[in-house]
Length: 297
Image (tube, rainbow, N blue to C red; front, side, top):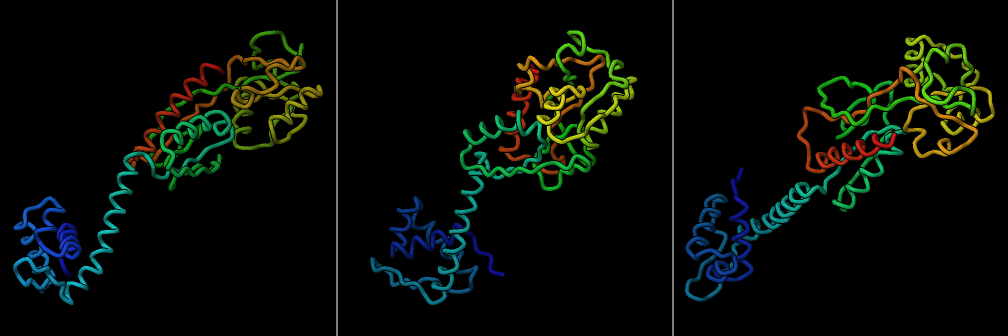
């Protein structure tokens, strides 16, 4: 295989375009002897002359071998320039980032993260996907928001503890925190038996409460509509209630539970892959956004 250096090809291209070694040296900021040495090294690598040198002030002429070398060399120089540009953009944070998320994070944490990333790095390529709560995998993701530990060689940073709150009709419970055991046998509207709902019901049972589930339905808004209708209360995550109409609805009351069921929301990434500047920045933004949100919950 021919061992050709890019700097030699760059010098050859300059000589071909300028016509003389002297003018090529002035363009490149080299001495003429340095240009001669580089062309000689290139000719040694390809096994023949790439220029005919008539001597004196007359321009050099490219040889047939030189035409072949220059034709392919220009392609290599173009690729090298593209590579250098891609590396520069990567270091500046304009690469691609793949993020796994779930609804609570998607609604309240992720928009601020994405907005700031795009403001700082308008050229970045952000790809989002929903997490399978039953089998979360880092895979090819750069970052993964999740509320439990993830198997494998994974690093993580805790973002916030999300508490579950009791949503009931006004006057159904005394003002203030409600002991979990008061929910034992109480009518309740709940999600279907999803991963998180099963975890919640196990947690309530561990604190002595087995509510009577009178209706299971999807969607926090639908559940709250049923609570307004008076068929039961509901236990929902704080992120689902934050900023919702439920907080100002005089038909509903929202209570902390004692003890309070909570899930730890963290941001995960592979320990086996080096972080790009874009990923590192996304982590920092997410930590700040979660800390601000935690102060509001």
